Length: 188
Image (cartoon, rainbow, N blue to C red):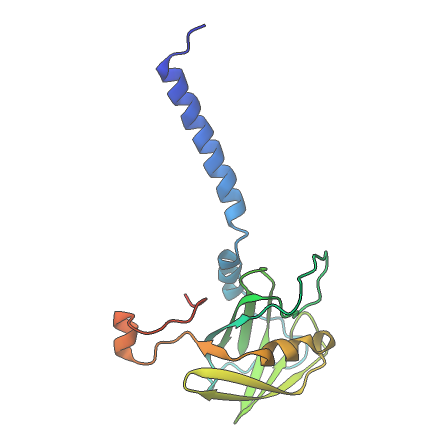
């Protein structure tokens, strides 16, 4: 039985197309595509209305969560669990969005800022809970201090305050244009 070169080329082309379509079907499940989808969503207002105005905390921040013991596989991990990896949070005009780029876990909610305090609400993980924090932004680093946050058995508070968050915005216009600045890992 002779197989022509033409038949082999057609077969390989068909195989390649099948592989590419199969790969693209699963590529939408990446953390970056989840992030892009999250940015398109608006938080549902369970309790406190969204205040749609710029605040001092607005921006994108990242942190690297360190490994605390061994990760245990679970079917329904607790929300806001500080799994190791890169975390990204975006505060924008009263709405926040957060994702762990390693696990793909994500959430959304609203916030209100008054001086150095931030109140988080409307989180689908804990619709009746409010989180009150003191925050400080110094040298483009955001730090949270929990005042009171019962959300997800207090995991939201420990996650947000566990490590400093680095700003993804360049320090000045020149750095923004030239990209000559130490961009933190996890910024896009």
